[in-house]
Length: 349
Image (cartoon, rainbow, N blue to C red; front, side, top):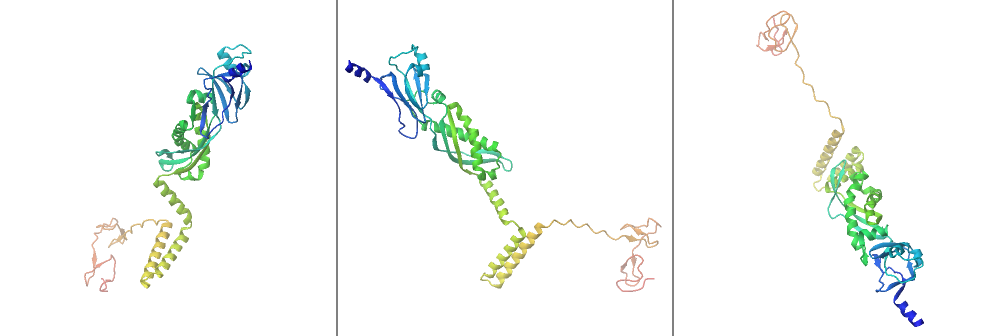
């Protein structure tokens, strides 16, 4: 009787457990080797694992970390599916899947093509970025139904491509919603990473996955934006333009003094320094208003002495015809009422 009992027991599975052989396995289907599972078998679920019973393709009971003696009491769904009576003690067939719920860390991501973002200062900007992320299985039932199905073995290689594409497609939205200017992105990697984590994680929920960490290591800006950053940095370093001009002038004089051309080089250096100083000082001063045209002095009537409009031929007061007065001696043109000629000095009668 004992030999027969041992023979029957050898045809049944009485211990079910799984030891993770590597760091990338997400799902492992326990190999029963064609045997039935003995009622009362020991099921061991380790930390960072979840065991799922599947009956003829239907999800049944889920076991969290711990040690279980399989009975109808702790397999209510499987018991209902198989229509077992209370206290059923016969062997049964079912598939047991172990799902790894630990974090899969140090996963690489990067943009293969530029990501577009709208910036308030530069308009549409193309960005290239890369970094790392971590994820885990958050809902084993959803993950089993939506992702791995009934595969006997499933690794991170099957899902990382999908996750990377989800990250890249949502990154531009995350950057735009964060409202961080393009020039300030490099100084806000941590804030942007945290914001992107909150924005991108819900996109993985329909797969039963959760994004647990997201890190931006670098964002490459277009060349024209980098030049603008360099110019802004240079202006901040220069500070006081007057002192900067004096420093440049002194440096020019020093370089000219060290020039082999001697005095000629020194003169040229001092001239260049003076010109630079004038240009910089002129740039700092407000622009002078344009000069107003000088109006010609008004003429006077040769008879009554009233002021006349320039070029008038008759006086509007007395009506006298205005004729140019000439010197009685040399014939030079004189101002109306002149008593002496400014050319020859002759008295005018």
